[in-house]
Amino acid sequence: MKPATSVLALAGILSGVVATPDPLVQRALPNAPKGYTPSSASCPASRPTIRSASGLSPNETSWLETRRDKTLNSMKDFFNHVTIKDFDAVNYIDRISSNSSDLPNIGIAVSGGGYRALMNGAGAIKAFDSRTDNSTSPGQLGGLLQSATYLAGLSGGGWLVGSIYVNNFTTISDLQTHEDGTVWQFQNSIFEGPDGDSIQILDSASYYKDISNAVRGKEDAGYDVSITDYWGRALSYQLINATDGGPSYTWSSIALGDSFQQADMPLPILVADGRYPDELVVSSNATVYEFNPWEFGTFDPTVYGFVPLEYLGSKFDGGSIPNNESCVRGFDNAGFVMGTSSSLFNQFLLQVNSTALPSFLKDAFTSILERIGEADNDIAVYAPNPFYHWRNETSPAASNKELDVVDGGEDLQNIPLHPLIQPDRNVDVIFAVDSSADTEYSWPNGTALVATYERSLNTTGIANGTAFPAVPDQTTFVNQGLNTRPTFFGCDSSNMTGTTPLVVYLPNYPYVAFSNMSTFTPSYEESVRDDTIQNGYDVVTMGNSTRDSDWSACVGCAILSRSFERTKTEVPDLCKQCFQKYCWDGTTNTTTPASYEPTTLLGAGSTVVPALLASVITTGFAILSAL
Ligand SMILES: *[C@@H]1O[C@H](CO)[C@@H](O)[C@H](O)[C@H]1NC(C)=O
Ligand SMILES: *[C@@H]1O[C@H](CO)[C@@H](O)[C@H](O)[C@H]1NC(C)=O
Ligand SMILES: *[C@@H]1O[C@H](CO)[C@@H](O)[C@H](O)[C@H]1NC(C)=O
Ligand SMILES: *[C@@H]1O[C@H](CO)[C@@H](O)[C@H](O)[C@H]1NC(C)=O
Ligand SMILES: *[C@@H]1O[C@H](CO)[C@@H](O)[C@H](O)[C@H]1NC(C)=O
Ligand SMILES: *[C@@H]1O[C@H](CO)[C@@H](O)[C@H](O)[C@H]1NC(C)=O
Ligand SMILES: *[C@@H]1O[C@H](CO)[C@@H](O)[C@H](O)[C@H]1NC(C)=O
Ligand SMILES: *[C@@H]1O[C@H](CO)[C@@H](O)[C@H](O)[C@H]1NC(C)=O
Ligand SMILES: *[C@@H]1O[C@H](CO)[C@@H](O)[C@H](O)[C@H]1NC(C)=O
Ligand SMILES: *[C@@H]1O[C@H](CO)[C@@H](O)[C@H](O)[C@H]1NC(C)=O
Ligand SMILES: *[C@@H]1O[C@H](CO)[C@@H](O)[C@H](O)[C@H]1NC(C)=O
Ligand SMILES: *[C@@H]1O[C@H](CO)[C@@H](O)[C@H](O)[C@H]1NC(C)=O
Image (cartoon, rainbow, N blue to C red; front, side, top):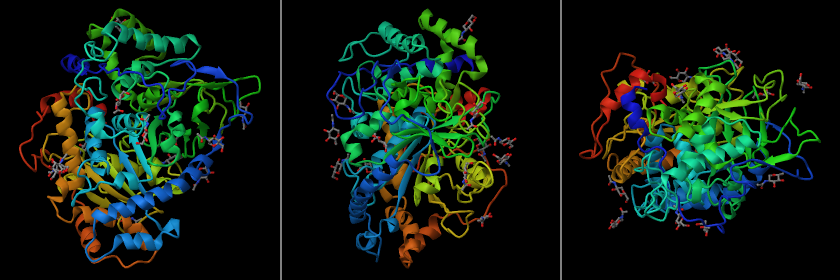
């Protein structure tokens, strides 16, 4: 990154907000025994083990049964306002409800792309959430979130998912309020730290000290730390509504919330990539890991196992914890998990030398870099490696005491589709919100879908039973405008290498604002934040169906498509028209397209296009800016 951008990149990133403590809440719990420091605890009677990835966890399986009734009712609500001409979808859902495997199974995936992805994704979630004012009006999509079984996030999209779930499945409207001390205060600068003049209690100096002390506490307790520990702590001040960025909040505590246990919300999943010790560029066949509320692990044939998340940090060896070792808890800090999925943004902190950050922080980062080397500055170190001596024959990490995990977008699969195409999850339709910065001006061009599609073709290797609909190359995406409007992939389920969901691709596109800020723009005025969220709302609703009056009905058709096949139901005429309109027709056009510079569709965009900034970054930082 060039100096000019690094200064910008710093302004605002470490800023944060500290709200008043609320210790009694029944939500993601501050349940780590010793704050940020993992600590030994006695093992439960049946000692934690790694399980094979040959199926879903018993926790997920039983939770899904509870969730099914909730999504059933939510879908009926949804189809009460999203009507399909000459077809009674509510009646259809009722009719098939006795056989739960006939019901649609919906996943939502929110891509990476820093704050741009968080905000554009937030607009999508806001539009899908029946709790948003007016979202259940005609032409809108409120209730899709309540109807979904899974919500996956990656990197910047993972910040979004984490911020919602760690804050008791809060709403986007509540996260973006303008009151002092509320959560999403992205205008605050990295150097200021939390505001000192409102309900926040810390000044900048103690903000840095607190971050540093938290990480040092983990290190002093004998755990290797990486820049991601600092990054995750800093991020927490931006995303978690608790004093000091909630150092005791764990990702596994999401599973302990009352409403989560009643399955009142979709299952949240974050994605990160494995990186092998001798590998600096993450390849497309990297192992893809997921964090769900119960487990960390992967369905990939390499490691093919899951560890109980609560006990991450314990010294597993060959899949179990030796009798002379105790169980460790508190390693799965929620900010560390979000930081892992977005470890690329360690870059923000690494500009430390060109800033006025306190020297103790510069020293801390420098000493980490000396230990791990510049080339490894994006890793999140998981030591002890839970998969030590696990699957010796196929796991490249089996003989390592540390597991290196990186940003979930580094393999170019920047949309977290991987958890949602696992055959065991039986997802029928994925709403894939893409805020990637692929093109010169930071718009998506299908690269994330291409990466997942290509990976799925290795049927004897890394794909391991997953399949993905055929998608064209990126020039076709641009030439055919497939990145300017929603596009469906996989409409024809007979044209597949295996069972795949229908993918509803929802690319970032300017409706009312230029939402193509650079991935590394670190601070946003509230008005820009709100405009970008509004634009994301319009991206997924097509401007509340003003761009196409059938759009909300077509979303309904996409939801029902696989279910129609299973129940051998005649596809309604309107749905046929929708598929005609939105399904990729299988043709390609690979002539070199002109520069892609869309203008706002529904009126003057209010956000400044940081095109110059984007291109400066692209020059120096090509791969990174794509994420
Ligand atoms: C969490 O959200 C649920 C559902 O909205 C609500 O009933 C509960 O009171 C909330 N808990 C807290 C502590 O805010
Ligand atoms: C997950 O399942 C295991 C065993 O089936 C059980 O002991 C544990 O309590 C469950 N976890 C949660 C958070 O429900
Ligand atoms: C909701 O709709 C009402 C009536 O059309 C309107 O007055 C109100 O401003 C809308 N609210 C939002 C958040 O758009
Ligand atoms: C943040 O916490 C404060 C104090 O407990 C609460 O009033 C507010 O609603 C919370 N905001 C969100 C988005 O959860
Ligand atoms: C990944 O693919 C490359 C070839 O593209 C191959 O050399 C390498 O062994 C593969 N790695 C794994 C872990 O499958
Ligand atoms: C900061 O600068 C010093 C002196 O040039 C250098 O040794 C150190 O590695 C730098 N630290 C980082 C984090 O770049
Ligand atoms: C894996 O390798 C280690 C070290 O060589 C060995 O001790 C262990 O028994 C092996 N595990 C299996 C299941 O083969
Ligand atoms: C698509 O994006 C990739 C980066 O993700 C870029 O290398 C490629 O040139 C772009 N192609 C088009 C046609 O925009
Ligand atoms: C497919 O996967 C296998 C095993 O993971 C690997 O050896 C091979 O190189 C991969 N092929 C491609 C084309 O990536
Ligand atoms: C996935 O990988 C595991 C571990 O290598 C293997 O046992 C299983 O058969 C594979 N599944 C498919 C469908 O290929
Ligand atoms: C599906 O259709 C696409 C586009 O027509 C084609 O390229 C692809 O090979 C087909 N795939 C299968 C498995 O039939
Ligand atoms: C869509 O509806 C939402 C909520 O009702 C509203 O805030 C927004 O301005 C509408 N967008 C358009 C383009 O009409």
